[in-house]
Image (tube, protein in one colour):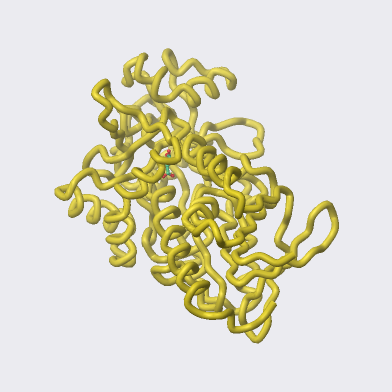
Length: 395
Ligand code: SIN
């Protein structure tokens, strides 16, 4: 098979990259599982945006502080400045962010944010965004979407990427491409306890490493402070969104005493919980959602309320046990501000890539935004390359 652009992964970064390319570019998107099984679908809390010009400084500072000031400043600036455009774009794809009666966007809050600046759709923001991007991609005649098609290797010629080897129903095939984009998501499938889908095992990063493509910050792994504790191991840990704490939920030790400011950056809250669990001799701490008005819980967090109910907890009347779990990877394939890797004709976007925007620890709700900002930049760069110059090697 031959295509202009091969995108490996169908989360919001892969889909957004495809949708930002012109309609005369032939695009093939492959995904290892089904389209709904990307981590983008699981994102609960929401997506940050710069609310107005006055918000720039504090949003920049919040992102840098959470990242221990190891962030790439230019990446942070690009992400923040592009955020209103991304929201506008998503609305044009039909994404329905929560609004007040006058139609103004509503904003929620999560840890380490100095103000409310997170747009959301109930507690299923990722599903709302990604399903609309997927629908839009399915409508485009220039985009071919292939499920259950696993990338097994890259095709390399003269040290340049010219496509990928894939496996579909046990059969190997080759897809030749002028430009290839790795959008294979995170690494959580390699962990015993993770909020990620189990099949997300860092395939893009592994294959890049095989060919000496530069990687960055490979030990910067984020542990989310609050996932629902269960005695038996589940396929993946169920997230109790940080926006629940943003709206007033509290954390308690075994004596029902608070032990941490719940809105500190998530690496600090995680460390405090792990210390407390050790001191208590327990596998969890308590999270109390009862300070959140019942109507807010029902309308903003129906997915969490329902999941807890199914697991035997009535969040209106009792605390729930929570425990930290692997959640996000700040490191990955090193890319420039156009999401280009160190290999010719190879890009990386989303959680697979590391453009330094998150530094050592990602600020809550910056991931959906970052992935689309830099997927859009990859699309612009690819477009220029496809127009401007002939591929250096013929497939
Ligand atoms: C959450 O809703 O707590 C997760 C949001 C994120 O990872 O940014």
